Image (cartoon, rainbow, N blue to C red):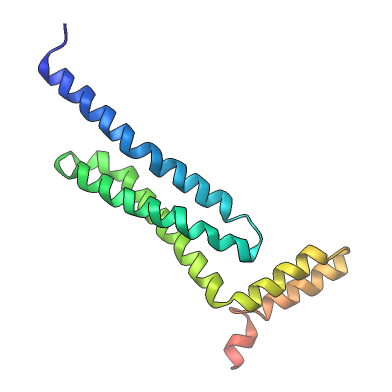
Length: 132
């Protein structure tokens, strides 16, 4: 027979798993969408924002528990935030990044790839930005 405490622990673990699983799927979907070509890559914003909202709800659910149980949701929230900031930076420097990606995708030789690397160095964080 199980005691009432064990039943509560099982119910809590079941509810935690029920709330954690969609977050995991949404983060994985966001990671996969980050590998799409640039205009389509912004589709990743939707699952990542949903994952962030569900992670905040999970952290509220875990607010009465020990701090150790909140570590992975907090790390997940940080990773999602970094991915969203990466997408925001790609939106800000869309022209430079899309030109670099087009150059890399059409490069057939090492010389062409070298020219693309020169283009990348002149991009948003390269020398061109410092000279402006």
